[in-house]
Image 1 (cartoon, rainbow, N blue to C red):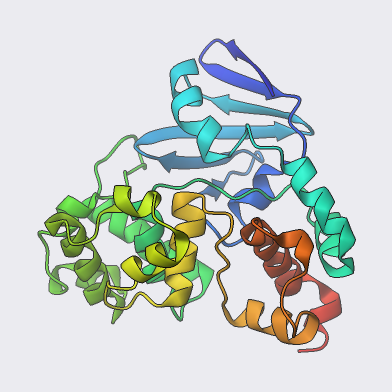
Image 2: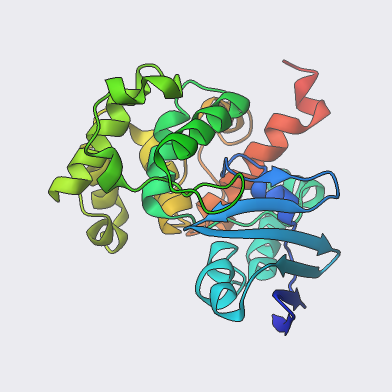
Length: 279
C-alpha cells in the first residue's frame, strides 16, 4: 500500500483485492450512504469522511494523515494481504466462484460496541429497517458532528437509559437487549478489552451472557467488531450454504479465515440469480 496526502485528503494506491462498495454494502455495516456522485459517506468513531474509488486508487476526502493512519487504515484492514488469502479459496469451486463474482470484499474493523449493538438490532430484521433504526439511534442519542452526521452513542450513555427511552427507535423487543448490553458493559460484567484477547470459544460465551445475544450475534460481533477472522456467523443464508454445499463442513482452505469465506459465500448466495431462481 502507498499513500500520499493531497490538501485535506489522502490518496491510497497499490492495494489489491478491495472494492469499497462491496465492503460497505455486503451486510456487515449499516451506516454508510452512497451519494449520487458515486462517493461513499460515513461516520466512524466520530470521524466523517467521503470515499471515492477509481479502480485501485482510493481517496479519503476531508481526512488528515493522522486520521487515515489511526482509523481508516485499520477500519478497511488495508495492511492485510487479502489477495493471498482469497487465492487459497481457488481450491474450492464454490468459493472460487464467489470470489470471482465479488472480488474485493474485506472484513471491516468496526468498533466492538457499535458492532455488538448493530447486530443486536439486526436480529429478525432486514437491512433497510436495520439502517433506519441505527440512524434514529445515532440522531437521538449520538453527538452531532456535521450538518446531518452523528456519532454512534456510547454504551455509557445508553446504559443510563431504559428500554422505554428507546421507544422512538421503533426497534421493538430489541430495546431491552440493547439496554442490557450497555449496562453490562458499564458495570464491567462484560469487558470488551478482555474479550479482544480471549480464546474465541471463551469470547463467544462471554458475549452470550448478554440477553438476546445468541451464537449468530456473538459471531458477528467477534468478526466485525474484533477482527476475529476465524469467527463464522451463521444466519438463514449461511444455513442454506452449509446444507447445499458443505454438509460435511467447510473445506480446509478456509482454516483460520472462515469469516472471510463466510462473507464471500453469504453475499454470493444472497445475490446470485443462479440461486435466487431456485428459491
